[in-house]
Image: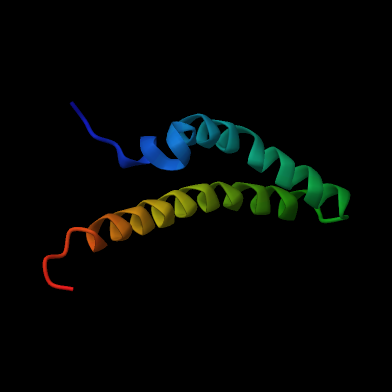
Length: 77
């Protein structure tokens, strides 16, 4: 059985939230950029780069939770 630490983020809600963000975050960023008056190409580049923010956030939270778990397992404090 594979143990994915990301499934435990936010009380198990993260896998659903991640799928939702991967689908709609670029659309929202594109629409906000286009409405703000950015050129279509610049708005689409900004929207495409917004996907990496979700992956970076997930890695950050996993690292943060693994460090918290390691603090309790130290024998010498």
